[in-house]
Amino acid sequence: MRICLIHPNYHSGGAEIAGNWPPAWVAYIAGALKTAGYTDIHFIDAMTDHIGPDALRVKLAEIQPDVVGTTAITPSIYVAEETLAVAKEVLPNVRTILGGIHATFMYKQVLSEADSIDVIVRGEGEEIIVELIRAMDEGRWPADRAKIKGLAYRDGEEIVATPAAATVKDLDGITPDWSLLKWDSYIYVPLGVKVAIPNMARGCPFTCSFCSQWKFWRDYRVRDPIKVVDEIENLVNEHGVGFFILADEEPTINRRKFIQFCEELIARDLPKRVQWGINTRVTDIMRDKELLPLYRKAGLVHVSLGTEAAAQLKLDQFNKETKVEENKEAIRLLREADIFTEAQFIVGLDNETPETLEETYRMAWDWQPDLANWAMYTPWPFTPLFQELGDKVEIFDFSKYNFVTPIMKPEAMDRDELLDRVMNNYRRFYSKKALFHYPWRGTGYRRRYLLGCLKAFMKAGFARQFYDLGKVDYWGPQSKGKLNFNFDRTRTIAPAQMDDWQSKQDIAAQKRAAKMSRDGEFLMPNGAVAGRDPASVKACGGGTEQMREDRATEPAE
Image 1 (cartoon, one colour):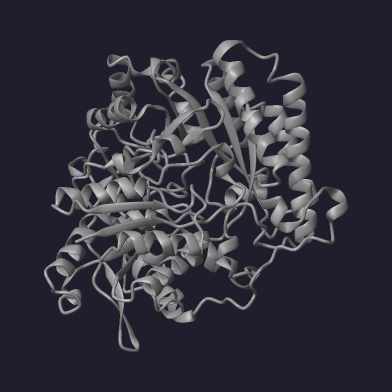
Image 2 (cartoon, helix red, strand yellow):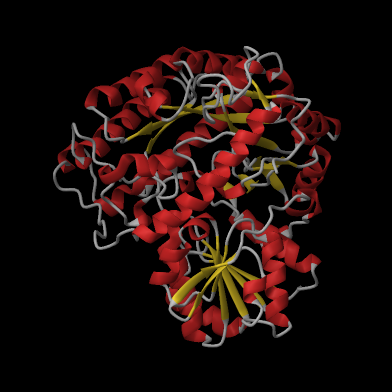
């Protein structure tokens, strides 16, 4: 059976400014399939290679696959649907499969609006895809589809979802096939080296009201650090990778295994050949301040901190307890350890004002991170906060849910002013950094890295790709009142869709949280048990709870 995996051709002016990112899902899905004996696998990276519908038709006609699979996060869902429509157009008998977080939770809506999709894989795909492909290969599709857990499909006029499949318990049993990727295409612009995105853990034990990752992965599971380093060493030796970013939500949650990971990198002398970055919480940096030199010795050079918001009011709205002053201290500690810091601010909520936006700039300059990002709040349609916002969310064009388009309209300003003030923050922060910091602060690697980051910003800025400025026709303050965000306001969310994921996923999450509370899974720094004491369970990127090291290896049930 010939299988073709396609990464959809979606672009926005966010993370892409730092380079082309290798789609890790392809390696993990292909690895699982090849282990099961399905070796005739092809890959088309339509995003990196900018392959439009016409060119895709030609490639699919050449490959002649029996099965075409793709994935979608929320902003790429329409392109993914179009990708599978093209496949059906070229090859009417091809089986089409869609996976990813958006389809997992919004399967009723997706199957209602895209008749080119034969089946959706809901949740982690490695085990489900093998069972699905095996059924197709053995001629048991569609007769046996109801017997396969973790699927959604149309049965006549009805949309059917089979029971959820179990999460992948043996993450170390997955051998990703990184050879499918064309590694010369994946370059980290600041350093000019090949970049990879492996993972050490899946899931998150915390429940941010604005995040969906804890709902998708369900269990928090950590791989054997030795096996993770084996994978990284292979990426360095076989594919020439010089930089990697751990794909984990927060790899420092499990302190003991993160230390083991760092020690193993050092033992193999890998930091001389590869450096890396992570996203983590301010409280973890405060907790591990004595260990930061070890992390740096292991090659950790870039930490992105979820400082998120300016006012304590917003931190509370996001179920966070991080004190604003701790953000500044965490950045100072990282700077002293010679680790580059990136402060992330969430802007564009309904309570945003010109004053709060100005406050984020003042904080960024006071804290002095090496980099600062202002991301537009994106209300994922399968998160608790989305429902709490209610009719304050008026845009349901998911292609714009990309962290750079103002989905929410603040009460105190219009979207044009919001974007302009965010751009004003960027202009002031990076112009001063470019003139007075990057060329003069530090030597060697530090100077090279910072100038490389500046190069990435300037390259995207001049091309007007940064923040999708070219698409909305933004040229500066003079553009206010003239911007066109190109929202498709005909798109809506079906009420039945919202009721479906709310009733199933949130109830399950509440049961797990109750069990963890009974079992004492999380221990607060002050000794309180999460779930029993007031305000104990908060959120990633700012919560204060920590995982007990004596229980950190046990997955949730």
